Image (cartoon, rainbow, N blue to C red; front, top):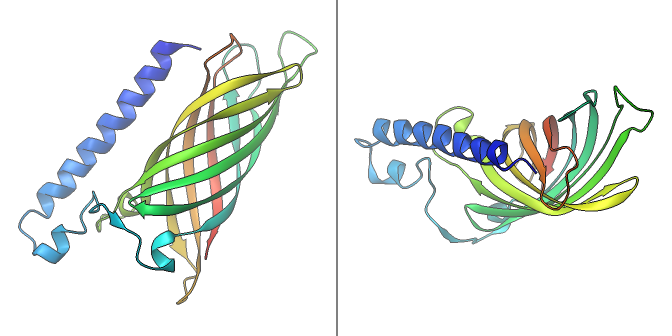
Length: 198
């Protein structure tokens, strides 16, 4: 694992989102109490109904770019989750990819099963109000072994086709998968996602 790269990405994402959040907070500082209570950082509270749980299932398709002598290739995945406590979400992300090597006949084949925790932003700023940051961890299965992976993730899910009980979202996320117990290549993945929210 490349600790410097991993740390730089986490710090960069945190600073960027904090700056956006502070800008939004400044814009809404003169607004009414009802608006400020639903700002970029939602008030922490228990879920009161089915809508607050935000259960969802989704399909993801993107590109995985491992470090070293591997080609960029497609990554497919499944995403499930819910929000047990506002604004925190939990879920499971399963993804698989196969990256050809430029220097050998051995491809880098991986299937990851990561438990994920997220913080969901709010407010009224376009895209930011539907955005989230999180971290995921779990086993990463290779064709010749198993590693432990840790991944900071940032993404958004914009509602489409809404009705009273459910809706679909279109979104995207960026994930940096770092392997903490081996020298195998870390990987950056950019994905699009279509999710159904119950």
